[in-house]
Image 1 (cartoon, rainbow, N blue to C red):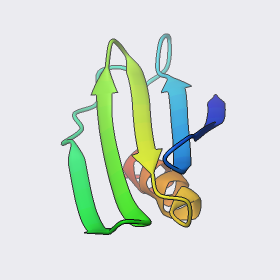
Image 2: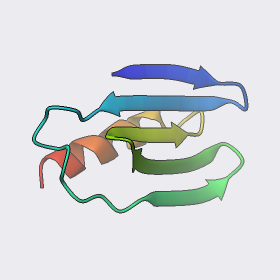
Image 3: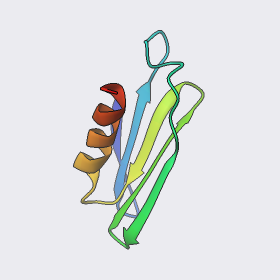
Image 4: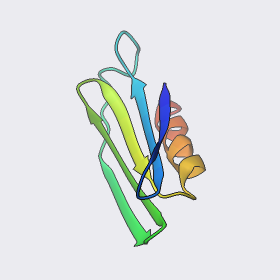
Length: 71
């Protein structure tokens, strides 16, 4: 898992799904734009779960991953 800051500002999260039960689990990309500092984008690309989030949306991004893994 990698969590880094974005310069716009915000957060970037990358979680490798390789060799996990999640690697082949379906996921529908998410794009939410509530405002300049309140946004979230989530997608899977090349067996990596990715999220980009506004500065106040780190918890929401991680909760999105946890919700997906518990279904």
